[in-house]
Amino acid sequence: MIDKKIDPLQNAQQAIKIVRENASYLSDEKPTFSKVAFNMKESEVAGPIEYVDPEKGKQYAIIKCVNRVEEKQLLYNDVQRTIRDEFIKSYGKKITEAVHNQLRSKYTVNIFRDVLKHNLSLMGI
Image 1 (cartoon, rainbow, N blue to C red):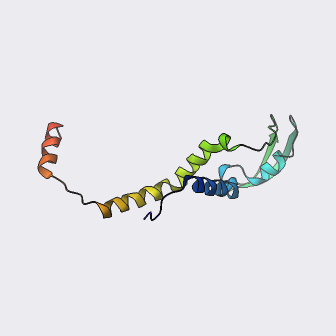
Image 2: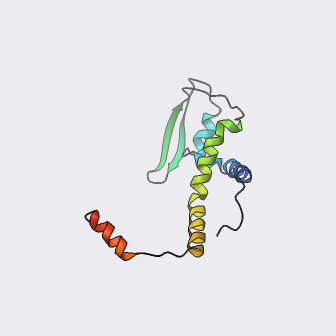
Image 3: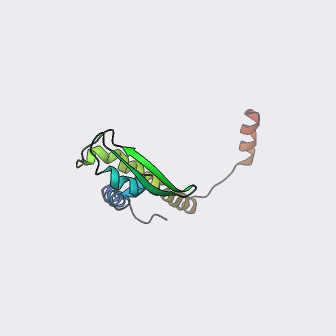
């Protein structure tokens, strides 16, 4: 249950911290490839690189760097939407459930079966 007001700035700062600490979850790429790829020059080919596929076992790959994008410090405005979306994805269900529980405990639900039956019959149900 939510027992305090949500501070958007504090939550955004917490979301940024979570994203920084868990940045590897954003990529499906195995660390083996990224270690090699980040040290390559444009048009350079590397491999064979051995890796283990969970379904196929030991595999080999050859990779080519087709484009390099230099690292840069992102501004908050550049990542604001991503942070918001990640926060909603991570905490949206939890917050929604807490709000529903809070509303259920605060308000009584009255079902007027005669009105419901009438409206359903008008809809052909």
